[in-house]
Image (cartoon, rainbow, N blue to C red):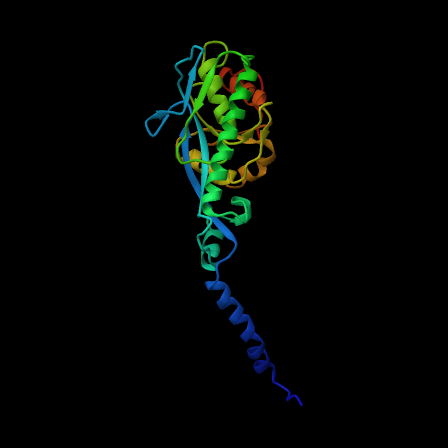
Amino acid sequence: MFSRLTRPRAVAVCALPVVALLATAAFAPLPFSLTQPGLTADVLGENKGEPVITISGAPTRDTSGELRMTTIEATSPDTDVRLGDVIDAWFRTDKAVMPRDSVYPSGRSTREIEQYNTEQMKESQDDATQAALNHLDLTGKNIKVTLKLADVGGPSAGLLFSLGIIDKLNGDGEGGDLTGGRTIAGTGTIDAAGKVGAVGGVSLKTQAAKRDGATVFLVPEAECSDAKAELPKGLRLIPVTTLKGAVSALEALESGKGSVPSC
C-alpha cells in the first residue's frame, strides 16, 4: 500500500536523488581538459638561446619582423577536472573546456602522450621542411634544415615553420621580407605537398597572438568561424588552405598589390 503525498513533500522527496547526483558530480573528476592561451615563439628568432631555424647548404637572409607560432596550454592528462572548474571556465573567454580525448589520445599514459606529441612535432617539422623546399623548387639540393622548439609538441606549428624557412631562404622573392616587418602569427598543420590543415583551439591562440604583439593571424580556412568567435580587437584574420596561398597573401599584404583573403 502507498500513502498519498502532498505536492510539496513529493517535490522534496524527488529532489533528493537530484541533489545527491549534483553533489557527486561536484566532487567527481570529469573527462575534460581545461585550456588557455599558451606561449608563442618567433620561428625567425631564438627559443631558449638557440635559433629555431638553422639552415646549411644554401645562403640565408637576415630577416625583420616576426613569424610567431602559437599554442594552447592544457591541464595534464592526469589532472582531475571537476564541475566547479568546468563552470568557471565556461563563463570565461580566456579559458575553454574541451573533451580530454580531443586533447590527448585516449588509453595512453602521460609518458606515452608526451612521446606521441614529440613524434607529431618531428613529423610536422619534416613535412614543413619538405613543403618549403618544394615551394622554392629546392628539393634535391644539398640543403639541411634543423628546427628546434623546446617544450612544444604536436603538429600545429607546421605552417609557420614552412613560412620561416621560406623567409630565411627567399623572403618575398624580390629582396623584401615575407613578413613586411610585421609581427605575423598563426597556426595550422602542413603536409609535404603544402596543404594546410585545421588544428583546434584557434580562439585561444588568437588571444595569445595579440598578447604577444601580432597584428595578423593566419588561420586554416575551415576554422574561420572559431577564430572570429573571440577575436581580439586589432588582429586581422587571413584564412589559408595551402602554403602557396599563405605566401601569396603575405606578399600581397606587404606590397599592397593583389587581394588579401579574409574570414
